[in-house]
Length: 454
Image (cartoon, rainbow, N blue to C red; front, side):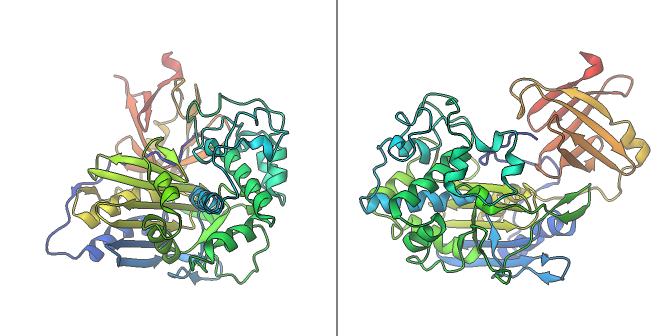
């Protein structure tokens, strides 16, 4: 699979650029924008848009449970994947505000068994600059997900492994292990399990009663959406079951759009944190920190705070624009990164800025045409997966892309030799030589060369 950091902004190169018509209301345009994603099986969930403290859109789409025909509602709870890091970071800051944790203390106080722990600070963890090896990259990580875990058992998986870089020197990629370790630190300093600590220290005091941390103990009737994933180009299937405790700290939280709206309001107006801690969260350097990606956004001509996430069966996106006082929340129970495109475009719809309307071709591509797209392509060292060789495979009415890891991405036709990776929601374009044979493959901004051409 490609490594796709949570902060990458996806721009899909199809559909006509639109402007919000003056004669149409914003809610109508928001709903019109969302519908093609729902109708094509690439979004089911809830979307909330709030401006200047007023909810202007909050609507549910699709099924929370397809087998039992239970519809999503605005009260449905969703796992939010990497957006969970905001919850973990704020819980740590609550302990900082209480004097229980110092951001500059070294983590060997908590986990002396970690190599380089005497160099890593809590601040390095919370800004994802720790250099810890990534638990998600371990060869047995899929097995880790199939068993109940605790923050201690997760950290034990990386104990003794060398650091990837000098702590505090850079941001390499999303550090899942850093937030596993923050969950353990919260446990050690609060004296209670991580899920309990988050509820006591953060969620209950802020009135976020529909939110929590999934430690595998949730009752069956918890108003929780069931997760699904793409199957081929157009279908869906139930996502594989995992133990959410295996994502403690980095992806184990669940919530509703209403709670996310309240959460953002309390974070940014200062009620959730002291002024000092809030200012740390608002800093735009380093760009990554406290569960947010922060900085000037050219599209909106102002500072933007956003985060997205994807975990088996679910995808999420949150955006806050302080100057525009705009909040966008997209929670989905389909494992697709389309939520990122949805979220950024819905902000544009709400602000009257240009955006792209999703428009698939009316006719599906014939099997014979798809066969002419097949081939193997070599990408360079700067690709999501360095030096990856990927293969396009045509089977019947579907074209898919196979990664070195064995993962398969279905490709949705959107034009002549143009597709969208259904899982990662990236542009895919085929370039042909003078004889009509595939010569190159463009994936997002990267170009791979057909193997026969090397």
